[in-house]
Structure formats: C-alpha cells, structure tokens
Length: 115
Image (cartoon, rainbow, N blue to C red; front, side, top):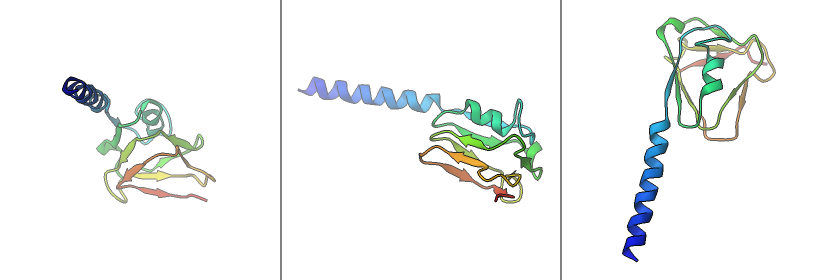
C-alpha cells in the first residue's frame, strides 16, 4: 500500500513540475495591431500558464484593434506596465476582447473606446 502512495505522489509531482516548466513569458514589443511582436501575435502563441507582458517601447502608445476583436486563451495572464501606460483601444468594436470561459488575469492597463 505504501508503494502505491509514493508512486502516486511522485507521478503527481512530475505532472505539476512539467506544467510549471512549460509556462512562458511572452513580450509584446510593438503597439501595432498585428504582426511580429504585437499583442495579437502574442495571444496567438500563448497557452495556459503563460504571462504576456509589454516592452517599454509600447508605453503610452495605444494598441488600436483595427483588424477585429482579439481572443484571450484559457489561463493566460496579461500584465501591463500601468494604468495610462499600457492602453488597448477597442476602436469602437462591439466586442474587442473575446474571453474563453476560464480564469483570466489582466493587470495594470487601460481598455478604452469600447461600444
């Protein structure tokens, strides 16, 4: 009985250790709506557990969503550089952010121009 409990513990530990190792920090390097280094690009490659952050080059320059709404994947954290510093402009879209039904964390940014 003891061997099964130890085996179960080790298996559980390895699964959680693997999940934590796969988490990545993805940096948005441009305020462009699309293309390499954009928020849209970062969200396209992000998976659960990843954290999306913003380079200083994006500070104060709104990311205007000109090619439609963006979808935030399950379990992805988006951390801006501060209110009024990281700005996502919805460009008057009906739905600028589409959220998968999941826990979502968005910190330190302004989302504006939403209808």
